[in-house]
Image 1 (cartoon, helix red, strand yellow):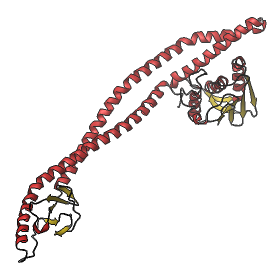
Image 2 (cartoon, rainbow, N blue to C red; image 1 turned 90 degrees about the vertical axis):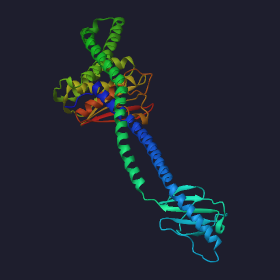
Image 3 (cartoon, rainbow, N blue to C red; image 1 turned 120 degrees about the horizontal axis):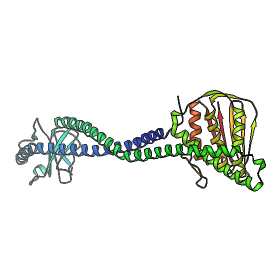
Image 4 (tube, one colour; image 1 turned 60 degrees about the horizontal axis):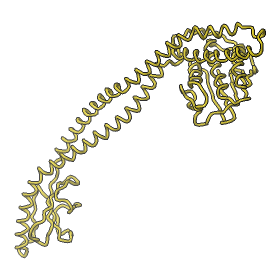
Length: 394
């Protein structure tokens, strides 16, 4: 059975939101850090491989220069450019124009040793320009063994590093959440203890005020009693809200075919004194008699919060009308209204958009909780400075 949301539920939801945001940021940063280290490792392995191949290329380069010198001296006798099955080569003049090459490819002269297109290149600048060549390039095909080993090592490193980072992140998150859990747990216990202690005095005050025969009192005393009545009902409503929130699933539910019109009449009469104190006209209009299978205390709590909010955020000389239609209940007021961008947040617990008015921002959170439990649909429409209309349909 669904019940009103307790502080434990809110704590769990807050933890999930914190966990999601922290995890998203932490995972993103972890990926960035791991990627940087992977790139650095790849770059270092590539440089190590080039240095290992450099000596081989230098040896062939020296051999090629000797053969170029011989060709240069005996050019009138032979025109055969020196070749080797294991290596490719090319020569460029001082203007970086290609003189000859054994392997047509895109070559660079701005680096001495580099890997490109699967070939390792070494650029040599000889002391003598044989055949007019200022740049002599020798190249050999990369066997790719280092790349395969490097990729395997990077994958293994990424898996181990990411697993470690996730474990570390979980430990850090638990440490960061502990103070919040302790603080909210302490607040939860405080509210439960406070509401428990308030039960007897609040009930005594409200009950005794209702027993007073106000018709026998003079006007001055009647006004004082009315002020006490208003204060007691305000405390009683706050007490009931806190009790509903803290007890949660422990509240005993007794569903019945409830006469909605009768409950409306009761609650409107209950809130008359509060509305009158703020100079707000509170009335009801029953267009169609309707019944609903629901717990009376919970439906009363739902209606109480709608009326209480309408009174709290109304204007002086404003009005509130509670309307019962077929399969729907409407609470309409001429209050300060709600900004369009805030309407979607109204059901969030502790949501308050007017700091000048009191309250804890619990009203519509409780309404939403009860509505969810009984599959009721809550719609809110509002225009700033004109009023708000809340519709509960079933």
